[in-house]
Image 1 (spheres, rainbow, N blue to C red):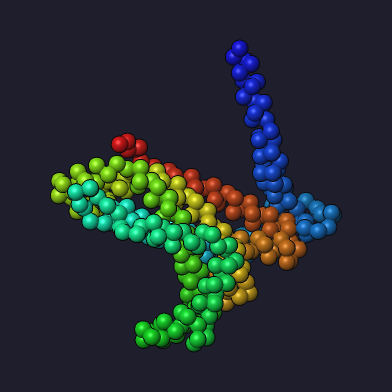
Image 2: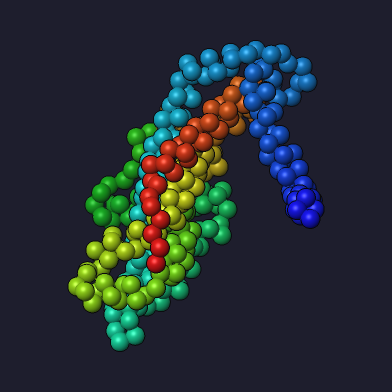
Length: 303
């Protein structure tokens, strides 16, 4: 009977595992293999070059520059996205006045959730086109019109190599906050209101309640969000490709690893070299995810 149960479970898992092996594992294995060749991506003829692609990659200044930009995004995107999402979600849930019914959220919080989540229904190219139009370097652009009204003058924004990458980061944050706000809001909704009410009765302020109650109880959700945002930061290909000129921005100021992989694989006919970049990105993603999960691990808090 026991062996029959195993066979029954295995019969259900066989097809999903086979599809996963074909469509997920197999492409990774092929990428590892092609990274050791000089394949152009088109010709069926190529030769094995060993680790030459990785040696070339180590001296590729543009790729190193792209890696540095991804690391900047890796720090800024999760940090600011999670900060804003947590603050807004907290305000929507317990930011209203306390009354006889207990702690209340901000009035009209349903509308605010919808407004924050709106960017999630837009495709990345659409977001990129909207913000590139807003940040146009002409004086008639929306961003420059606002800065002029505030007496801050005008800026080139996406054409300025000193700030172009931070403009892209801002758009990534703007597009991501809504999703994580809804995620944190759902997690906060699962925390009994009695806990907040008891804390306020005992004299705890909203700020201390956030750091001593809300944050610890949401830590598992925050940890998972940080890993997902780190993966987004290591890509950012579509936004950079559509939003910045080149693409890659002035003086490669917005160049990222995903864009380098696409350029070398499809534009320059260096698929083997692009595969080597993909292998580096693969292991970098695994290492960063493992480090983040390890560094942010805490004892689970039950309520």
